[in-house]
Length: 398
Ligand code: 3PG
Image (cartoon, rainbow, N blue to C red; front, side):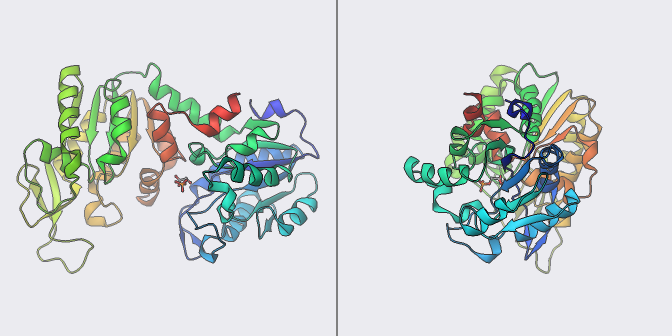
């Protein structure tokens, strides 16, 4: 069900669920990637003469309006990117919303305030969610699901509203799914998966599902230390998930049995503490099997960065999720930079999973066009690769 399936939308009110969940510093948007990615669908509908009503969330507010979770700064940025005024409703389904929608002419765009200010959006109670979805649906004649980053959420503006209006998949969701399918169905080989981020426990399902599909699995980030510990090495004060040690051991054995290479870093950038203060001594590079007792691993070392880059050099398919270190601090950004750099050079399809890795790529100043695809969805792209049902997609396929 693509946009075309909705037929002529001129003069129709079209509710679009976008993922405009961007990082803010006060009211300043520090990375507008998700807003930019949402523009083409909104613009296409506006150009086709629809009255476009955009709904989205920001952060995880506790159901009540809180100024720091307001979408007002996002409305302004969206307007700049669209090159047209975006009306902003100060509520999602109340008076301000209905007035804003009633005031729309053909091609006009309105953004509704943070949908998560309403209890019904995220309620686990189907009836509560359904009642809220009824209110949302009353604002529109059709629904377009374009918030890829939330399709794994069974929430009113993602799931329930699609059962109440003629619904279609937006171009962004379609593009994301098309790329992710290439990572799971007959991927071109060699297929290299790079995983980082702080916790093994966040990546269990994706490792499980990709372990036999990939040729190589490169592991960095905080999750490294649980693997190193599983191999019998001491990790000092580094992040460690003791309860996951047996799981890591099982993965190492399973990989060996299946001819899949798990590549762990051989050197680690350590410091005596974090967050950064005056450093005495300076961050050091140590062998991964000789981390001192008082040291804390904060990035993969330069030899590991080079080895990861070499493993990526001839890859035909790459999926990367999770930074290799605490990239926000320059002293610990080297590993993440090396992986990002290598991805820009791979001859095949390179996909950067959303969330932290997408933010890292932009924060480190890489040109987004140098990557095959930068996903807008962190949790959503992982759940897709885990092989899970995505409620926001399957509801559209009914
Ligand atoms: C994200 O940031 O990954 C999406 O916007 C979803 O947000 P959520 O994890 O709060 O549902």
